[in-house]
Length: 357
Ligand SMILES: Cc1cc2nc3c(=O)[nH]c(=O)nc-3n(C[C@H](O)[C@H](O)[C@H](O)COP(=O)(O)OP(=O)(O)OC[C@H]3O[C@@H](n4cnc5c(N)ncnc54)[C@H](O)[C@@H]3O)c2cc1C
Image (cartoon, rainbow, N blue to C red; front, side, top):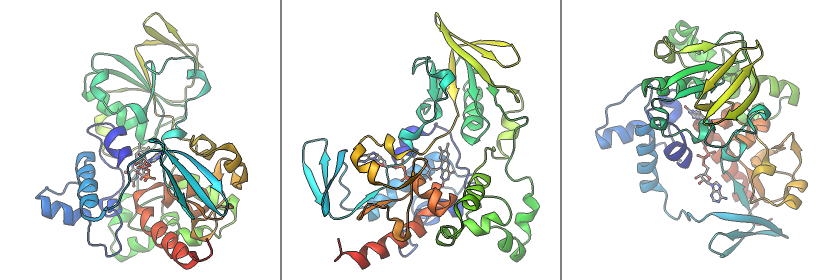
């Protein structure tokens, strides 16, 4: 739960529907609803981050025996198996390694902001404590959920906020909400995970099927399903926040304690902080525990590992799940809802092949 408990902003609401926020267990017994009933938590829509984190901890307490929390510093190939070196110096040998270490190292910091310090230009992934911005002038860069929700939370924490986005206008999810309320017809158009627009939503619910779609078409489906947009409940919360669309920052420099931003219309902003809602770029070479000689052996498409059935990479015994698997198995793998199909397929593959490892 590190991502949710330590990285996402306090007060955040999950964008995915409640039904798509169930952590997966084989019997589907430890659902969000089961947690709410057992802890007497009032079910809320959208789902508050705080409830989701508590649900994750409850889930782990009931199911997660045997989780070794030590940091892995290095994964080396030691044919035919792997050697893992842990932070405390211990070593573990394993025939099979599943990489599921999330998106933290993939934070995108556009070149124009590189010269600003990490206190001045903060990625949304590091923006958990919104109160650090109270009373400050903050520009939020981006037009996705991360940028827009952070802008709303900062505004509510009494920061002076402006959103700057390259897109000509902001997009909001749920423009055709009536299509979701037509009973069985809606189920034909959208899967319950609700990732992507009409039709695509149904397709991406089957990661195995998506993995057989030719790469170009698969990429189109993926980028369309997760294009930048905000949840509808942000529209009202942002109604008094300054939003500048169709503009990019061309220069960013620190002048004393201030950050001076130049925009492509020649205008200038002087602020205290820049919050980057500029997304993530999967690139497995940024997992610092994977040595270059290992990543060189992994077939890739632009930083994503090329995966076959069982989420296996081109290095025997090495598997990837989560966001890194989205280029091969589609956008559901970016979300909690993707865990069920990933875990079933992965476990089936590993158990079938145990003798071969
Ligand atoms: C702004 C934003 C909003 C989102 N909203 C939603 C949403 O509403 N619904 C949804 O389903 N998804 C959402 N997501 C996607 C979300 O990231 C994924 O759903 C999910 O949390 C990723 O889980 P994970 O297990 O792959 O990664 P993480 O939750 O990041 O887990 C990675 C784990 O690996 C561990 N780790 C890392 N490196 C090492 C190492 N070297 N050694 C040992 N352990 C290590 C970490 O400690 C951590 O426990 C959102 C993403 C963003 C950026």
